[in-house]
Length: 187
Image (cartoon, rainbow, N blue to C red):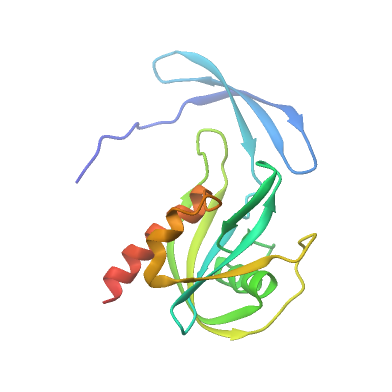
C-alpha cells in the first residue's frame, strides 16, 4: 500500500536553546513550511544514542518485569527492563547489560521487535524493543538509587497484565502487544 508523503520537511530558519537542564535541552525552532507558513515549535533534543527495552521470557514461560520509582508520576510503575544505550554499544549489547543490571539475568537469544519513536512531535528519541530468551543468571551493578523489584508474570496471562493499575507506561504496553504479534508468527 502506497501513501502520499510530504516531499520536504519545513525549513529551519532558526534554532535556539529555550531551556537546558542536566538531562534535557529544549530548542525553539522557527520553521517555514513549503506553503510559506511560518511557525515556532519546541522540541526536546535527545542525546542521539537511543534507549532499549527488553522483554525477557524465562524457560518457564514467564515475563520478567521490574517495579521502579518514576519521578514523572511520583509513583512506582511496573514495566519491562529498560535503559539508555551507552556509547559504543549496540541495542542488543545495551539490552543484555540492562537485563543483567535490572533483573539479574543475561540472555543468549535476542530478537528485535521494533524501534519506536517517543512523542516524535516533541522529542527525537528512539527506543529499541527487544525480546530476550535463553536466560542465565548474571548480575551487574546498575545505577538505580534503590533495588528494583522483579516481578514474574505468566506469559499465558499477558492480558491480565494490561489490567494492572501500575502497568501504564505506553512503551511497556506497546512492547507487550508487539510480543504477542511476534509469538503468533513464531508458531
